[in-house]
Length: 340
Image (cartoon, rainbow, N blue to C red; front, top):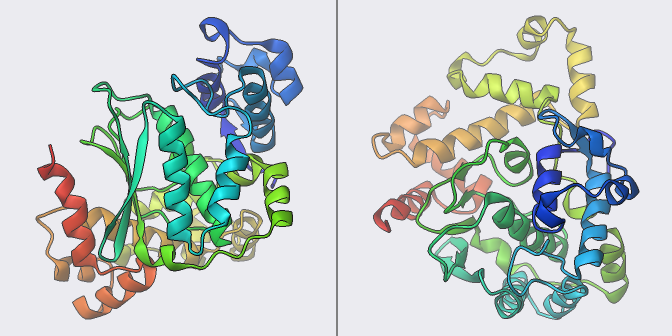
């Protein structure tokens, strides 16, 4: 885990809400995690992902609940280990995820997940018996567990195409967008995560020794997607998002705009594990998903705005990016409005 990986102090406060009496800070506990309690109320304060992982483990042991006491039943200590052990015994990732979700449905009262395949796409849908939605932190903690375990089972990161949530958007979403997906939608009829279905066919070959290593490092090993939202890469992404792709600067022009040399720009991005071309590709994918959710934009117009020669080229690129065709994605993502 890089020392550049940080978590908003807002998420620390969220973790303490139901695990400390009246949400009051437990200074000795925070100190053991390596977190300065005096910074809890500073809006821009951040902590290392490693410290946040230590806090997670300490709270889980104190509450005997690996879900921060956010469900009437909760996940008793050892639940993650049992979930992983049962899932890794399955032949494919799809079967492993279904096993994990079945276990979580048995253990939790308020969150009842299921896996639904929709041709080339798959949804992990959280069915909820309560009419009032949970807070965003509850949903994202659930996704952190499910997606983190799924990525470990597959031995690679599984791209998230979109996440819909029933709750309102919290004021500190940057961390969630970095870890999960830029394509987060709030105040939706149901909570769900959308991924490409073909990844569910990946065969599972995890060993007991690999499981022990994974559990020893958890949850830090599922937090590593966090990056400082103030990083150079995030700044460049934000700038690209407000420009038409045809107006994106080349690397030399971007470096001049940032008052850097081209070599310094490359070095600083490399330190964050990024390249300028990779950032442009990432933003192009994000724009494709966003524009496909808009009825008024025809497929040809989206292809042109993204810089493709024609709709066929966009179609092929989209299938390469996400494992499904853009028309199918548009039909599935727009169905959420008709479900209201």
